Image: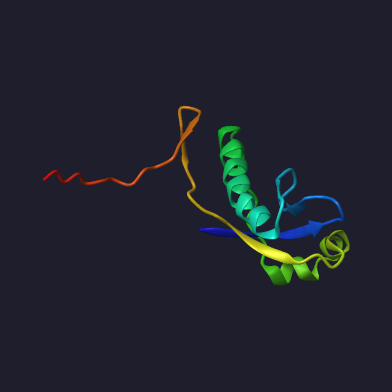
Length: 108
């Protein structure tokens, strides 16, 4: 499981935004909802990249991001959050299909 760090932005009279990876972002009415939505956004972004034959960049550590002056300038004091890439799916015949756990059925 990989973790990508993102910045969280909130401007007056707007939703909360979570920004990570070029072209991948999320939003929500609250901080919690924005972060919750970010997990789904990252998963969908990863699926789209894979189906296009591309790979996500390797995640950078928090320390590496914090030392990067460009990232610090862009973040301008915004908090960082870790967004885990969960439920990675394999692409089969150009379509993404989540791997479902096997269920045992007991009738009785």
